[in-house]
Image (cartoon, rainbow, N blue to C red):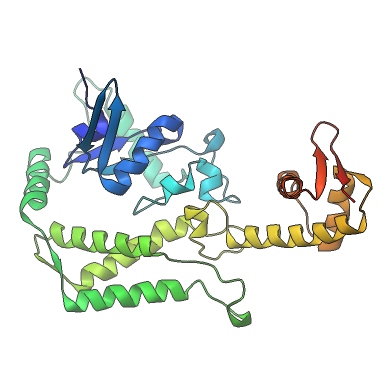
Length: 313
């Protein structure tokens, strides 16, 4: 007997996932295929099948230690694989900032649930009507891009890409948008037109999709160290600045080790020397990663137990 999972049961619907950060690695691997190809493949007990999972995914995740650190990136706070995080069209940061009005409304709502006759605010739209509205739009409304909307999409994408470049002849360029973000803009624009029961995507829909992208995903992709939008924060988990620092560390460390051929050095001594040379603080894990790379290349022999490095002659 083969039982369908949540993604397959949500075919042509929406799958809501809570505690997204606590999912196992196996489950996350399944999500990669579902979000990329809209299918789920099964090869167990002699059963080989590919099931449809044409579903939208709405997920919520908690930060590490249940506290969001604004000095760290979204990937570092949530610790989800960048390959999975980059597949979401919109990523919203919902921070619990104190606000008297909002706190009062939330408190009244929660307390009202415990009355004998629940005292809660009725939603502005009936649940049944909203369900029928969404079902009709999904089944009957299939918007197409107009010429003006297509030009607006291309223009917006170019403008987003341009936002990642800065001075020095383009040196140190960051990626502020990728083709995956362009596909997200197209889907968002079509969804906005579908909400209006419109069969044509207009420039207004595209502009609203761009606005949503800027206040959501690009805000989450802002490097807290530089304040610049860097989509590599989402797609790879590392910012352009971090990669540049690692490259500088590797080049300078290689020069230092070549001068010390045949000698044994402690990791703490290397770290102290490199901080003086580069005039910046170096994290232990970054230095260890570079040393392991040099060990794989046969340049050094790194002992993690004694925290020493022997430079081969």
